[in-house]
Length: 252
Length: 237
Ligand SMILES: Nc1ncnc2c1ncn2[C@@H]1O[C@H](COP(=O)(O)OP(=O)(O)OP(=O)(O)O)[C@@H](O)[C@H]1O
Ligand SMILES: [Mg+2]
Image (cartoon, rainbow over all chains, first blue to last red; front, side):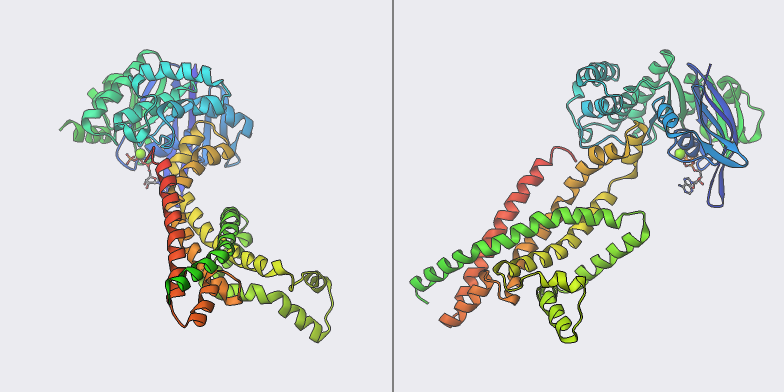
């Protein structure tokens, strides 16, 4: 079943067309990696799908619910109630974590379950403890974000997103704000999640990681999807000039 | 001046200290919530309201508080006298006429109005700066978690704003302690006025030094109080 369907999505900032005719599906349990040069529109794509930015053309469906479509050249969004339901199906992990600095690790993780899903504190805590254990942070529940390393903060933010049990989790360059020696711990966590058949869409510059963890890779350039396919195909044996050029820079 | 004179001056000033403290306390207690309201008016999406609020802030910060005190204090009697001279009668003047400017509390109320209007403008700018300094990522993270606008503001933004505005607020409160002395311009019986009178009685400037010492001690207390509050918020960066 397709968890996410994106059809002919477009987005313009002023005069700048950032996304042009983007279409792809993500199925249950699939891991999709999005790669491409800086400025190609990867973040904008994630931000449109996660409703942090309003797409201005095309169609987006999440778990069979329509988020937005285009009628007579105008973007039409679903009613607020539906958008709220969709909102809870999708999680996003930011490049720079965006943890709530005034809350402890535990409070960060249980904030939404208690105040949005209206779970009891006890319930939310029990679940958060499990998630923190999985992230290797069981000892850090009482710490504040400023007391953690970047890698630890990013793991908290993953736990925070998982606490709402999303159907699909988006990552926007989850390791780019980290020192090289800390990227490994995040990539390991994502691999674990992939093993558990978590549906994920990951924007990344870590080519080796994308090749290893993704079932499907999308290469974007200039607001278009230039090429997509199986990682072995795309990384090992691309026929596309632009893809080859882009990958060459990473292999050298 | 003899030691006894100094003791005498200090005792008299101590007698009028409550007036200074009363003005300080009322201003502080009222101008903070009014400042919060002004902050929201300025951020209002309906532009005319935002512009008017801006104009108000500009005037309050752009003109001397002393002038504002005089203006507020004399506004009612002056307007009434003008209406009487020209024989104008309408609901507005009838309403103004109901204010008893000879009442003992009138002066104090006029002072509090002037001080609150002025300080609310300063606090509003501090609070606005605090709100705007919160990174947009905080709003985005909260909205990704499905939080409603109210929840985002009260649970995520406000607690961080409070921490960030403490140092600037502390500065403003210290200035307020000293600004209460401006009330002497309309002969409000606070410690600056009294020390000036005693300066004349004793032909000595020592009463002014004693008044200065009073302000100094008050601000020492304010400083310690804010240091304590700041420490309370030090559990995160
Ligand atoms: N809010 C905005 N207003 C105007 N232009 C924007 C905005 N956000 C992004 N852009 C522009 O859209 C283009 C795509 O940006 P985007 O951040 O999506 O690229 P990206 O592929 O994520 O790049 P990177 O790898 O550097 O993160 C860029 O040219 C950028 O300048
Ligand atoms: Mg980006």
